[in-house]
Image 1 (cartoon, helix red, strand yellow):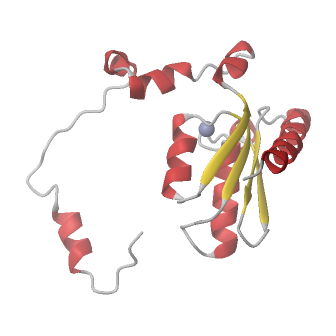
Image 2 (tube, rainbow, N blue to C red; image 1 turned 180 degrees about the horizontal axis):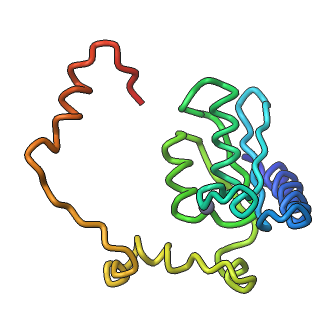
Length: 158
Ligand SMILES: [Zn+2]
């Protein structure tokens, strides 16, 4: 993606993030741009919808996927007003987008009280895992859902 396009897209999405504050959303916005030029905007809706996963990037990806009827957005680019948190990076990975560009970073967000640095650290520093125990407890039938999946002839791989 050429630098001028990225700058233009990010400038627009940053302005959208600023406007979202007026509507009680968090100061974050994102847009998914598909290879055919279609655009799907998302703004942070965590508080208005009581949904901790309603980050701008996730909202935009959900809209793009719903509109296209596809869970794979190959060739798409996500522009985000701020550095995506680990959940949003994972959402972009699952959506198979080509790239994510962002403007402000996690430190800018932290200065405004959005300190997801601990979440980033959780994945990069094993010493930080006490933040949330994720514990494996094997049970005898644990892999049966996968067997059912593999036996399902008309499954839709993703
Ligand atoms: Zn996020």
